[in-house]
Length: 300
Ligand SMILES: NC(=O)c1ccc[n+]([C@@H]2O[C@H](COP(=O)([O-])OP(=O)(O)OC[C@H]3O[C@@H](n4cnc5c(N)ncnc54)[C@H](OP(=O)(O)O)[C@@H]3O)[C@@H](O)[C@H]2O)c1
Image (tube, rainbow, N blue to C red; front, top):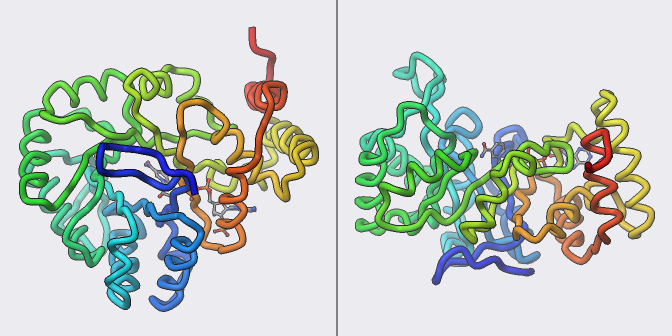
């Protein structure tokens, strides 16, 4: 499995596994362990979490599986996020859906994540969404403390536009290492508004969330989805892929920005399909055909 250098002493597997939907899979901790081991065997060593996933339950579901074989921790990189606050039965003190990037909230969230994930360090902590109430000094204090205590190795963001990235970075004594963005052939916003260019300018490899548009690309009946599905099917046949999911992954992987797709499926055969897409080459014609099919018109 190809690896992407994130920092001097940290690399991620090019294909990452996302655990947002882990609670939906309703599986035993033994089954989750089996899936984690399957991924590690395939070279997928990087796992993406957030405090809020599964209504604040997914980190602990993963941690319970890891507790069955704690030695696996050394073979993986754990990314998790904080900053979104959801009203939830597991957090009765939360009254409204809001953002909190205060020092106290970030530190408490990391303590909860460490406990849930059955680990004593997080490889990368991301601020989940840009917070209109963000105080760069507080975030810097929290990050510095967590780094000094050895609880978090590196820090990044998710869904940040360039001005939000630059604002936060200006307060930090060390560089942000990634920006986790919605990137897919179906959702082009970050390709079109300069956010992906920011990652390239900063030499920061982006993580791509919902690389299959959350599954919509297989089922949606809107004009754009139908058009894109037809083009993906055509390219699938040209390159000998098994499914249009592989063409969606290949479209991201063939882009020069070193995009790392986060696979959201819990099914081993679909995860394996994502790994196989690493070997699939798209030529310029095919790459632009998919782009234009999603845009609904030719490039100017
Ligand atoms: N930073 C953020 O704001 C943010 C937001 C959203 C997600 N994320 C991260 O990104 C990860 C991936 O997001 P995602 O789950 O939306 O990814 P995705 O891969 O775009 O969508 C996954 C969904 O597509 C379905 N699917 C996959 N292959 C399929 C196929 N061949 N046919 C039909 N359905 C198929 C999956 O169902 P099956 O499980 O049945 O295969 C699953 O429901 C998450 O786990 C999370 O870690 C981050």
